[in-house]
Length: 521
Image 1: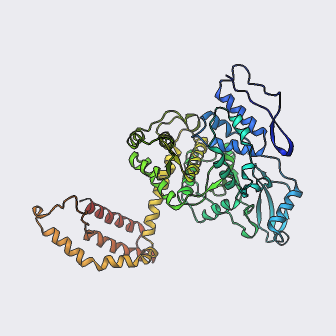
Image 2: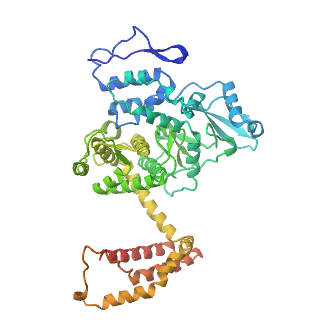
Image 3: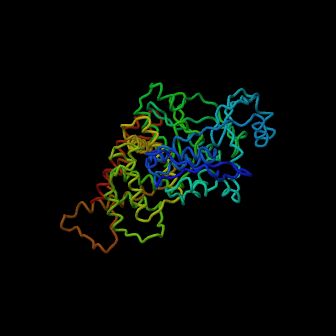
C-alpha cells in the first residue's frame, strides 16, 4: 500500500496540527521508490520549520537506523534560515555580554555573515583593531537548557507519522542530547582551544587555532578571531589542491580530535569544514562531543586492531563501549564467529562507495554484527560512530576512489609513533621519570649477575616451571640497558646541539627489540 504523506499547518500557540482533507499521495509509479519516499520525508520535515530540519540532518547521520537512500537524501536538508533582525541581535548582545559591548566593540556589522538553523554570525571590529566573528545561538534553542521543557521541543507524534515504516522509537532522547551539544557554544570553544600547537609538514596542516576572546564569549555567544578561509566546496571548485591528500587529511584531523579526548565534530557537513591560510583544516559550526579518556583509548585500540584485521581484539575493545540490551539472550560464541566473518554486504555502497576493503565498511559491519546480537552502543560510542561515518562521507565527496579513512588512520598511527620517540628523546621526559630509571640503574649489578649466571648454565640445566605457577620474570638484557644509557647521554648532547635525534631513535628501537626478544624467550 502506498504511503500517504500528510500535510501540516501551524495551529494555536505554534503547535503543529494535521490539515484536514489535504492528504495527497505520491504520483502513480513512484510510491514504491525509496528515493521518492526519502525525498518526501525531507520536504515534509523542512516544511515544519528549522527544528525539524535539524532532525532531518540528525537522521542523515544515523546509518544504523535508516536505509542509505534516506541518509543520503536527508543530508540535503538545508542548514540555512533567514537571519534575525538587527534589533534582536543587539538585544541578545546586550543580554549576554552586558557592559562589555560598549567598551569592547568599535563597530558591529548588523548584516549577518552567516545564518544557520541554530546560530547566526556577524563581523565586528574591537577597539584594539582586531577583526572578529561573533556567533550567537538562536533564542528558540534556549529551552534546551531547561530539562523541564526539552521534551516540548518537537511534536514526536507528528514525526512518527511522517517517518511511517522507519523505526525511530529510540531516536528522541539521543536527538535532544545531540541538539543540546550543538546549542552549547562552549564545546566549540574548547575544541578550538585544544587545537593549539598542532602542526604538520605535509601539504595540509591539521588544525589552526583562531584566537578566542573569552571575555566576549559565553555558552550562547562565541567571539573568535576572523581568519581568512575557504569552504570545502570552494576548494573543490578551484581544483588547486591534491584531492587525495585533502581527503586523507580530513580523516586524520577528525580521528586525532576524537581519540585524543578533545571535542570532535559529530555531524560535519561540507560547509562546516574550512580551509584557512596555509591550508590548515578546521571544523566550525557543527555539533561537538567529547570522549572520556578511557573510551578514547579503548576506541583507538579498536581501530588499531581493525586496521590489522584482528577481529578478536577488535571485538574485545568494541564490547567495552557497548552494553547488552536485554531483549534477547546473547550467544557469545556465535557472536564471535560472526564477528570474525564480518563482510561487506553493500549496505553502505550509496553513501561510502563500493570498496569492500574500506575501513569504514568494516567498522560498520562490526557495528551491525554487535547490534544484531543484542548489544547497543553507549551514548559516547554513538557520537563516535556518527562522526566517523560523517567524516568518511566528507572524504568520499573529496576523493571517491580512495580509502581515505584507512590512510588517515595510518598517517595518525605513524605520527603517534614518532611523537612517542620524540618524547623519549626529550630530556624533560627522563627528568620526570628519573626515579624509575634510578631504580633500574641500582639493580644493574643484580641484573648482570643473573644474566651471566644464566649464560653459564648448559641448556639441559634450564628448568621449565610448571604452567600452574606464575610466569617467571625475564631479566632485561644487559645490551639493551647499555643502549638505553647511551641513548640517554646522546639525548642530552642532542639538546646542546650534538648528534641528531635519529641516532637516539635508532638506539631506542634496537634496545626495544632486544627486550622483546628476551621476553618472548
